[in-house]
Length: 475
Image (cartoon, rainbow, N blue to C red; front, side, top):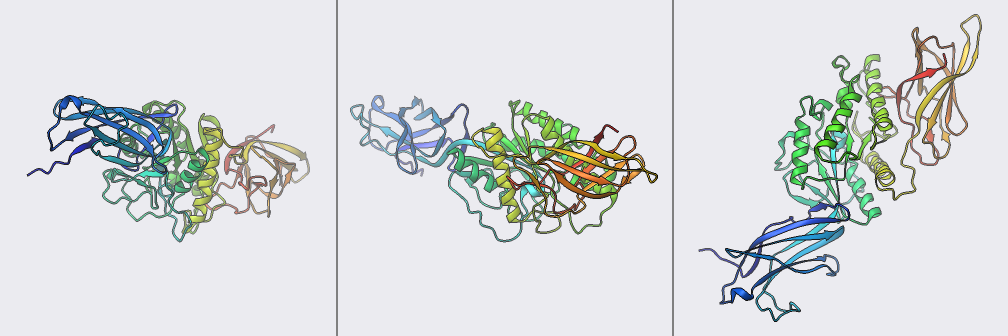
């Protein structure tokens, strides 16, 4: 025998812990369900109501609103809720029209811990999924929620890419994930903006860009779109950390085409999500240690890193942060301390470039030009100094050591860099043992495991972005 409960039942509406993406400061939520009374009643006098209150204080945000009453003891309402929270959604059934103060209506279902704020997608491969091993100080925080891969909203906790009971098997991890940068990212946004942040994990360890490009295999792109639809279809931006797999197989040619394919991914994602300015915040590849390397492998890592750097220069709305100075916990995965740093850097970029609410710099030193600054002819081919100019230096470039952080080559091969020094606030001078001939290029910290101590901005502590193939002008 069916046991019906007196009052309002919510059959459809946001689940507990949901974060709704706001638009122009509001989000619309639709509730509907049925009602029941076991005692005699006058149908003409019954009315369902719904309201929204702050969970922490009970302060009314949206006052009691009458619902549309439908045949079959059904009801429905659409509420326009301002950005903020966490909210509690309450319902009730008023039996008497002479109860305007709503003192004694019949009970109704409630939905707890609902927020209206911004949703960010997490996409990429293992360092996006999060494989930081070891202890960490990165506790969950109310107001930073996640859509778990089981399809249910929850408080955001590590590991974000937990595949337990997943309904999105395309990005099910083979190994257990651990710590990632993005809980820290979400907490810093929430604290600065003052409203909830939702996270949508969609990354997969080991994935190639082709799996994210809808014009190639695209299976993870389609999976990500399904996750976004499940969360309501609208997001504020994407945090992206990927590229190792495209750099690791020189013969595949994927490193050479990375920029064009990433631009295609970006354009299609913006088109499909209906947001031509959708922010995409990227992390430049970290380092790969303990593997047998080669010149070809080093160059592939340099080409992917440089494609990421150029994407942030050339594609509006794409940002980038460095990770070359971050400590790994195995041969390729950032540890928890490194992940916290990356999360902080991504939040800095978001708050400055996306939200415009931060005075922090949010940019890394970026090599933009190289030219021969000093040249001398001699019988052994001459000597030269090559000036590398950087932009986005807030303070002054510094370096603790003079490791081999830079390489120079021309049509005749490598040109030895005998020494380098910092000249002024934003220039590096390379002393080379011969004049470059013809087309010549500078590379900076491009290898799989480059120099640890590269020039950094003393005002932010951010290292320079790695670069590859920066043309030397004026030869």
